[in-house]
Length: 134
Length: 399
Image 1: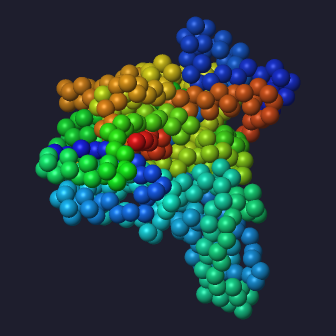
Image 2 (image 1 turned 135 degrees about the horizontal axis):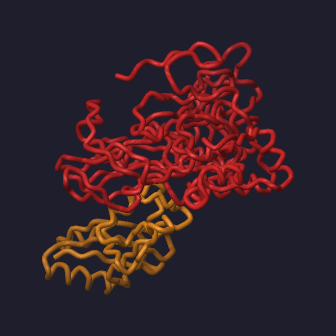
């Protein structure tokens, strides 16, 4: 199985190795998507973990037993309106019309409820007005 | 009905000028006719806010002590051409850092480059200047590294050799793989059609024969005041035109200049095209003085009367074949869907119509407030092969 999740590290454990043990002892593949870890401060990483189901469950138990909190990934795409030039380039790239060019105002409208977080817009936007948040 | 620029300026200064945008003009002319509108209106404002790759700025970086003849200049890691006098350099919009991975991992992201440095400068941000020199008796210094801000530079002016293209291709993709181009991402099998002008608001669509525009015409540039400085590179007034005089393929262009220190990051934006590179979105607006009825007649052109060629960017454009798949109007393009080879194709602009509207409205506001007077060009942009008023100039025939 394969899943994306957010691992939250309290400040007491940020200096301990975890990914090493997930790979070595639990035979899991760990792909770090985003990490924000500082010595002696709380940290957060977004990972995609894949492996056999029993290994997966055992790996998560190991993390939680050591004080790491595990959350499902709730990813969100943010439209940074002040960076948007309302050019319209994104409107044909978004597969679900979450980014729509209003033909009257000729402004881009972002409908977050339609967004499926495919992330195509992130690099299609010339002024980089779209951001992913985890 | 004839008016002179002096008469129009007198009305602007007296607070009596009537100014409308090129978009507002269309229903006025439909309702009142050309003659009545020309009698009533003094100035028509236009605007465009789109990617204009042929842009950049001349920067004087100031003399350090000891003095230095900078032969290599980097700004936030982006090289500016320094083969000029000691501390002058030209920063081009499409320059990328030497460390950029380019298209090695295709498609490259091109997250930062010359256009972004220009945006950072006008935003008032600190930019890292690194300069290198071989050292001479008069200019002994060999290396300089410091943070600079635009306000500290003795002079900085935007000088764009090709802006405000009069018409442009509509880009499509006939192959079964995605293309990454300066016209944006083109999805396979006619997945989308991208275009890039502001149509009925675009400056040169409203004065198709350049009757009022030429070097010396005062304009809105990047949020500040600028001037048309010359006809732009690739200026081709001989492109085919419709019965209304409007070119049906890329035609005239402008070289423009303006004080970078007046400009704003709202109207100079660094942009990134996936798999292609970086560029600069430039806001540009030109006021058209209503000298006669013809000015109004031409400026009243609407999106349904302006046509652009549809070009395949998998073969025809890159190979320079000049084949056109069809012609569509800007009204069709702006509706969101056109028909190409019998297929319905969704359209997307790369040029911000919303921004163009705001520029035309801003310029209108400046004129109404008496802050912006019109200028007569030193000569009109060349409109045909031959010898223009200022001297000898021959344009090559098309082909």
